[in-house]
Image (cartoon, rainbow, N blue to C red; front, side):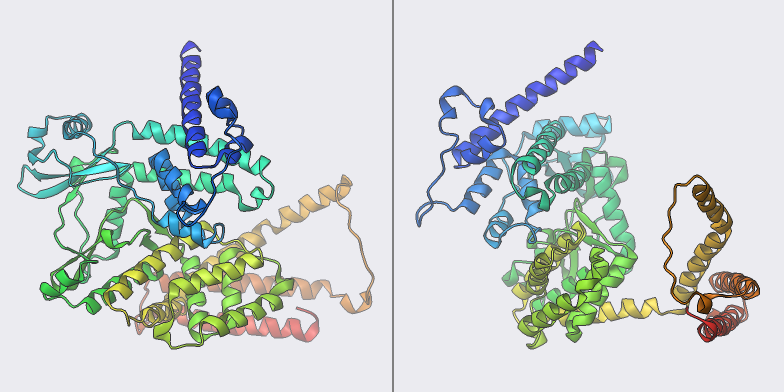
Length: 565
């Protein structure tokens, strides 16, 4: 009990100190009014409280509000810098001027001493540095807010990089996330209209992303999964992870040599064609999205190296995007709708991606989609900027209060970034030309025999569960009726035309059960590869599907002939 009280007291003290720092930074950059609204006045020294309502004038020689927000976030440290970078993906929430500034946030800080990095490595791996590496370079190759990177050579002679988490960063991030969560809650309660933007939910999602980025075991798993996705692909090289030299705080991986994708003159000097590099990079990015549903969320030029034969190597796998199969399919529909300039397909894909259900407004949204197509898509494909199109599409959704899930904005930012890299390498690079075939390929896969068999199988299992649970569900409804907990309003409309005999209902139920069993059995035969086969597909399974199809059509015909469906 005493220990818990001491821990709570220490946490409260850390929070008070941090609140004071936040209030002072807000005041310094002209956001005293915001600090006052959030109740931070009490955390300031008395001599500063009168300045709480003061603002900063803007002018040609003075920083704008967006610039001051960026400067304040940089001064507040790594957690707030990461928050700003995370928010830079949310064009649905923030104005363009602020997005531009947030994209400029620098994630570089002064390095911590190399001797401290050495001590962290020894503590995490449990042995002296000399028993782990032949050499360990104390001056870091690079330093960021979360970690810094050192070059080393293993005992086997392999050249590696060792990523070491910054000391104390976990405690700092934990305290900052707690405070940001509290500030988000206060913003939602005290600032008019703020609840529409769901600041608490956004901060919760951001906290999960940042905690995963602090865990280097998670990053190692990302790299290994990425490697499995592209194993055998000659266009890409994925660094090898040294699991025996990796912990939650230390990540050891292969040292990758190459030319930064932004160094175009160096690429040409090495005999590499920038347009081929752009083609490989963009194709690989789209394959990550549409084929694997696991993509690099920050493919900026500093995170992409080019090796001989136009081989691409992505660096920094701390932040990855994940898309479910169904989400990828609807994303493919959206891309093909944009390519085909089909407002109905675009609207349908948006509904499914967002979970939007107010279908009574479908005509209005389709009309706006048609206007959107007219403005942005009736031009040569090579002139269409997919990043701009997705951002403009986001603005259209805001008008209709359609909220897309967070992964949509992370994806939009990643695609915009990789498109920028491709255009920088080759100004005439046609991104749509490389995106559309992958989207079409995914749609073709959806219609493949194995995929359809799998879909039939799981649908039939759901039907089987429905039929199995039906008696108990009906009994539960009857019990509720008996207790008077259910009220039903009947409206008499041609009751004589709606009467069906008991035999008809029973026959159709039995027919449906047999049909479901046939679909399940056929699916199992297809998925089990039982011979004989035709084009690699078991014939018995195909025959079963044909019979079940005929049975299904006959049942449908019977229902339509004798009454409503």
